Length: 238
Image (cartoon, rainbow, N blue to C red; front, side, top):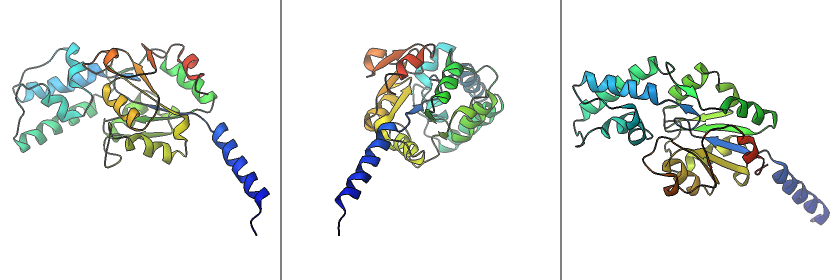
């Protein structure tokens, strides 16, 4: 016999859980929560010098970064390199140098640490979704004493797909037992926005990140320059 009262109670409890479920915030890494440009460019130019190619200036980071080591270097060339061995050697040289110098000059974006402390006090679930390799991402977060604030870190090699594929975000939310209807994405580029849009998540854009596009070209609900007073925006989602 079906007990209608019991079923109604379970539905009520389920809906109540969904309403009271904690907010989940997904963050991109490079250019969003940490200014990694100095160390990325140092590694990039190390490889350029080693292979006799042209070095780049710091302001070139916006056009180069965002999709991994090889893409970053390949964007430096007017013509694509098709030699697979050369690609592997250059990528290996980049990762080797960068991994040893990952925190020389990289710093958290202004206001980030205070915001993370506040978010933790509100029991907000936080994770990093980056197209940087997972081990490098974790190493950087540990060295900058930021790892303790995050419940999960998903790099470009954590799953079989990465941003702008929506599953890079939705898989993390599922792993953390979160609710997609109470999840937002924070990033600095069109890649982050595309992933958020594909996952049907609200997107908050960090200005002056690692992208060649202007804020007007990237769809967003809020535009921030740093994390000072970011809690006031997040309160709108709680």
